[in-house]
Length: 285
Image 1 (tube, rainbow, N blue to C red):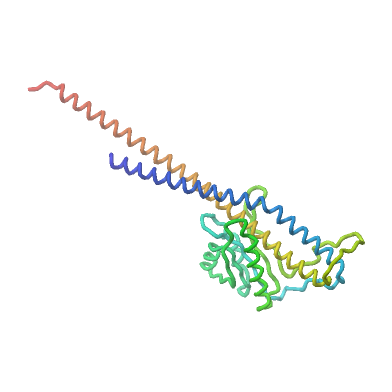
Image 2: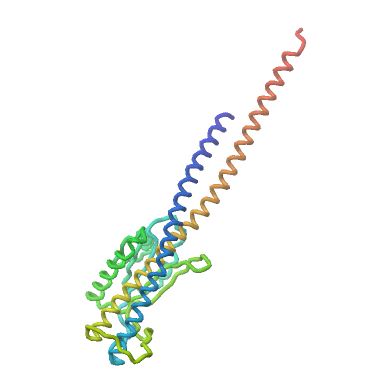
């Protein structure tokens, strides 16, 4: 019985250590999710400024000078933001399920080491992949590298229609997958200024629109990456919360079993003492 109690004590100690690890991982995930969430308003404001600038620049271009081309029959691409690390539940499955429905000729760009591994298991073959940023401060650099890879693919293969797929946190605290079109740029979505005052520019209008469109594309990639960063850490926080709940249940069960063993041990000692006392008090023949 003493050996069993020692085994239980060792199990309880191991579970306590696991609880410390899970608590630390949850704390890190919470901190990173909050950091990503705090930076999103600034990114949205940046994208809005670029959008207004495009609208103003379009007012200088003839109505057909910046029309988006029809990409219905063009080569397609999909940028997918998944998880960089594990312990995030079904986070990557949300976006990979969509990717599996794409035509086989679609050029797939995968961001996230864990997502890339899961994509390979599902028979998906990305044309480009990279690690997801593990710090919010690294998101702009990731977006730069992704932009360069995208432009290179466009130049080499004629890629003309590109979507971006990522997860984001909803207002209710849930996680949903979002898909947006990146290329071709739909210039009809940028409202022209209503006033007659024309902006002062130092570039030809067509060139200005082209550069602003590239800036807008970069802003959309930064936005998608930051949403994915926040959502991955939110998913990991939820997974660690569930794991901690399971650990608490396990600890409660082990503690109850330890108490029962102690009670059995005390009862056995009492019986042994009572039996010995009876034997000592019995009259000798």
